[in-house]
Image (cartoon, rainbow, N blue to C red):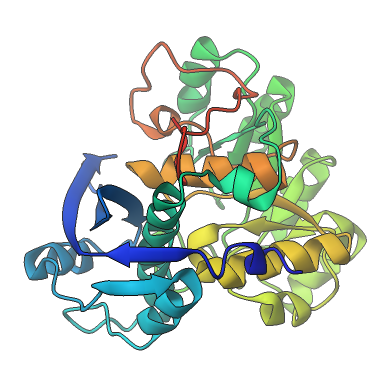
Amino acid sequence: MSTYELLAELPVVIEGYELEGHEVAFSGEFVRKTTVIRLRGAGEEGLGEDVTYAAEDQEALQRAGASAPLTGTWTLASFAEHLRSLDLFPQPTDRPEFRLYRNWAFDSAALDLALRQAGTTLHAALGRDCEPLRFVASQRLGEPPSLEPLLRRLEIAPELRFKLDPTPSWDDELIARLVALGAVDSVDLKGQYEGTIVDNPADPELYLRVVEAFPDAWIEDPKLTPETEAVLRAHRARITWDAPLHSVADIQALPWPPRTINVKPSRFGGLQTLLDVYDYCAAGNIGCYGGGQSELSVGRGQIQYLASLFHADAPNDVAPAGFNLPEPPPDLPSSPLAPSPSALGFRWD
């Protein structure tokens, strides 16, 4: 029996739903907006979070309100099939990945609701234990780059480790200081993004400086060109992928079999696709680590919950949300996080 089959026939009764907007200003240029989906039924409430990046898409969803036809008695499988028949975007989007993110928000809310109506939890339904959760903090160093964001977080959590986004402005002096910190677990080259604020060019000189400076770090999402492939050929075992992956088929289509991948639940668009990826990786001895998408509410806890069940001891980019704030609060926890699933449903307290 597949992992998804353990959940697919769970019944879920949906009587209505509401939307709840969240926003945080990460900088003067970037205000992050998300929407929490609140499905109601049989005296319970199930939550999920839409992490679609475009603020205008979040605003349009919130203006439209609870307009999608979701009420009824379903199983998780039949509800997922129904979701795929709907257009959940009140205004068109030209980013197909955004449709996956929104679908995950509704699908995860239905999972939470179904588990609560059944009087159980995700780990109990799957027959798995939650393990202490190792995490890293994802960080950009700004332009011009500075170590200050890292140093502020290390003052709060001295053992904290990082996933960093190198840019062409990283010079030898900065890299040497990073090496001296000894706190870098992975570097995200952001080479697989197009048309976003984090696009990073395929710079073979940057790639060479980074792979040589951090010989034990994972190297995520390079852009492959003849020049960068020449730099990376000897480091293929350390290369991981994130942005191109939305299904098992995408993993199979990679240029070589990976040792590990970044599993961002919302990228896979739904519970079945996500759990099929976990099953595929387990069968093929492919490691996984979790990734986040600047969740502002329940979604962060949900990805921590999944990471604690499926890859707790990996360098999971699922640090508590406070680490993402421009000024992180002084009482943030250290890694690993103690397991803290809610008494019911698909939530992490």
